[in-house]
Image (cartoon, rainbow, N blue to C red):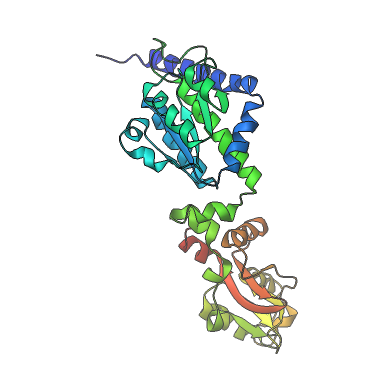
Length: 324
């Protein structure tokens, strides 16, 4: 068996086109059933139970995961297993979202009398508004497609894509309705680079105490260079007797000073320092510090409380923590 590269590319492009058209057609199918489904989910004091068989089951799992990570407690229940004990995972406080392209999945239909007995609101996501599942639902979301991307029109392809996109639309609508924030998102994603980026504060990363490069305004330039060398941040803060920030002196300032031919042994730092330094608060996100550094093309940022120096955060600190 050999592969024709041209035929493979043609198949891929045809699939992309068909599935993109199927998703675009979803917008034409949207009606008041969508906000009704959102209202049912928002009103739930329990969890959103997402269920489906076969390929729809795989999509249902992903929808449940997306809901859970965006502020709507949810989990997946396999409809076949629900008939053999897992029905106990569904309570009267929950809302069920059932996926079935045909709307006739026997495993799901078997659960309908039990769901009705519990009084659980049912949201159906099908491609057939006249199906038994759709008619039994409290809100029906039409995810039907004219044809599957599969050339045999058999394998669930376009239909599973539209169901997935409809699930994403529900999650985003609920996220916005709840006022879900980036910090809320970070709470449910504490691991890995994403969690670190969203959760880490400047106070967690900044240099403090003796590690802060600092000199007073009368310090001679030669001594300020020694402080810069010892602290290894390529800069020093210039402060008064109350630790109030007066300015900064950086490697760039040194180059400009040498260009002017100034005597490093007699010139006080106040004559060559840069004023109006960028600062950030200790309780800000470390990602915000990175943003300020990138926008201003600087590698270090003073952490200030009012006008007083509390610390310094360097680009290398952010790189080490996986923020940059």
